[in-house]
Image (tube, rainbow, N blue to C red; front, top):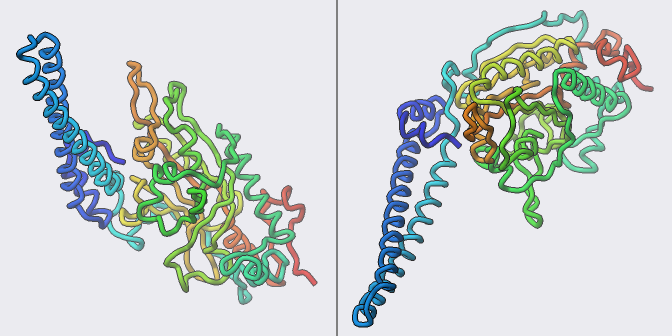
Amino acid sequence: MIDLKFLRENPDTVRASQRTRGEDPGLVDALLDADAARRAAVLAGDNARAEQKALGKKVGKASPEERPALLDGAKELAAKVKELEAEQNAAQDALERAHLAISNVVQDGAPAGGEDDFVTLDTVGDLPTFDFEPQDHLALGESLGLIDMERGAKVSGARFYFLTGYGALLQLGLLQLAAQKATANGFTMMIPPVLVRPEVMQGTGFLGQHADEVYRLEEDDLYLVGTSEVPLAGYHSGEILDLSKGPKRYAGWSSCFRREAGSYGKDTRGIIRVHQFDKVEMFVYCKPEDAAAEHQRLLAWEREMLAAIDVPYRVIDVAGGDLGSSAARKFDCEAWVPTQQRYRELTSTSNCTTFQARRLGVRFRDENGKPQTAATLNGTLATTRWLVALLENHQQADGTVKVPEALVPFVGREVLEPVG
């Protein structure tokens, strides 16, 4: 959630952020009103309790003749205090609801607009040209014995799949390469839980705009995560971190689950948009003043991974309306998919500033020893979807696919050939 002090001092900035996102700037005024009402309720309650305390002292010192009247007054005041405390609790609840409704403040420089209003920051690599009709990733995956959608649907339903043979080894190789690169760059590898409590899912911002994407186990009141960002954000919830030696960096390797609600008819072929996939996700806790520089580092590490699999891609600055509630700025790397003649997202890195950490109570001590709210960032280092770009860009006329050099040690082959 955003800093209330910042909101009080900079309401126009927050309204402008809401407009950049395409969201209601009136929510800012609703939050300001709720904040004022809660502070007024607290003041009224404090004054009544102070009056109650003073009256209690009078009762203790009163003569027998004075005491009955004072006790009657104390009884009335006690009822008033109880009523004011109820009003204070209601005002606090209303403030929390209004507070949760406001998305993070968009960072200066992020473009306004929606999904199609991004700004391209860089384009890397030459688009492949083929002297044959290229196959899409699913046709290649089936002919090479890498992907089995039919049996995935038989076992689990639409948008599920099996990765088979070298398909499984390709994914494991991608994730292992990502884990090695993360470890070499100072990340602590983590295999986190994929079921989390509601307060952790809420704290990361995924129960707002994206609530319909999340799987919930109602009987256990737990949520399946769509990214290991969620459990890694909750890992230090309620703690005060030592950030005096720099950021804390974690890399989570996990299966991820998304309902893909609202995507009916979109990307129904292959493994671009599925309900379950694996991913290595970077997650960072740092001081707020270090977050922008750390964001650039995460982007650079993502680009190193894309260079390792040798696919053409572009880097985009995501527009405010496509950020998600927690992110103040987001950069995506999109790889070229030849059969679609378009770029598709492979990585995403977000600077969430203090938005998640404030919800989850993650702090650090400043140079004066005073607790301050930390900043959090996240970024994709490899995921199942990468197989789409890898297969399509490295296919050859005879139906084979070259394995990128960096993955050969994990896969055990330089070329994948059609199965009998």
